[in-house]
Length: 126
Image 1 (cartoon, rainbow, N blue to C red):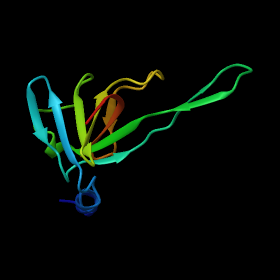
Image 2: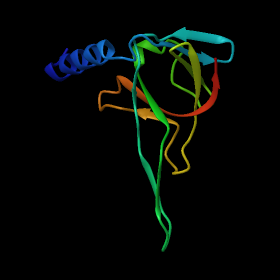
Image 3: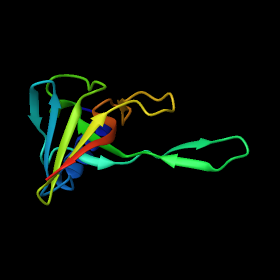
Image 4: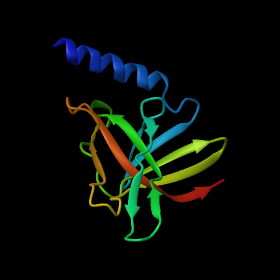
């Protein structure tokens, strides 16, 4: 393992410690689920639309960063859902393609060890 790989592994471990602690995080594809509690962390990608002669519109809901090794059924897919429980309230986010031409997910690092999933909140319950 190279020094860079060791550093990347240490960074992922540190990010997991600072993960969405205390919140339950369930990743769902169809009827299959993976518990990612304390394994995934959040981020945000701000997308911008600059209309000609108009106002600049910025948007982006929530990104989830997940180590490739933790997403055991393979690469993310558009339509997969993540339910995060915060204070007894379930927030469901769907992996989807932003209206910018960017894909619904990408690798977050050059070593391709972390997925960055672009999501949008589609449901709130509780």
